[in-house]
Length: 310
Image 1 (cartoon, rainbow, N blue to C red):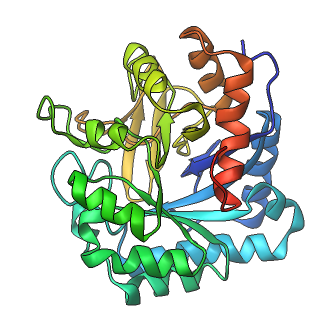
Image 2: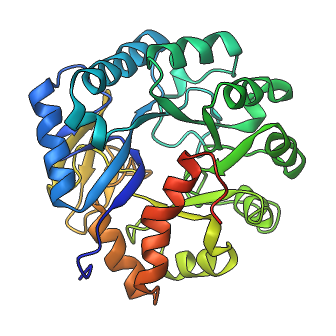
């Protein structure tokens, strides 16, 4: 069990308990209910996450979240910001993950500004593939405008990652996922990011499915404790059990083991797990409560405050 740990800050929540942030049909009351469910599960704060879609759809979805946050103090307490994941990611198979490949595009300041402006000051984090950002222009612009930049869904070279870090990249999103199941055995995105673990915060989905427990334990033994962040990557299925659920325009199937799959069963599509589930998985591989608290509460808060996780 999770030993009643609470106060979680989850930087990646696509949806929860039946609500999908990547849809256009939920109401203010639906969002209030989601916030209450998060509180019940010990979650203090989240970043509502909008994933790759045609730009006009992303603008509407980001604006919708921002509007509800501005209108309701209780919602604002739970949702202090928005995480935009895409559309500036790798379009290559495996790296694109569950994102619709037709909507992926190279990073430009004009499009980034359009998305950030739609958030009315609430966009706090953007995940992009550094190799999609020519000369790190968008990374610099986002950093200058106080939006934290994360790498993800990426096959950036080591040199590209280093340049991006120098330009303001501070985080890498769900390492071990958003990449093909088969990679070159030495020079691959996982090894490159791990080699820079002293310079980057790195998030992991600790649901027991996205990264096998033995591999997660290996990763966590390499990354400095001050740079580890645990995220759920939760979708609307989170906390609801097996069934069929929506993530934007796609249908996701949650199996009896709790894994959330694309409809063709080729890759995971977000997570159906909650933060208490993550705590139980971490405990099962020998992580103590003090580190779990640091990785699920303190380190995410430090990153969002613009500080190093130290």
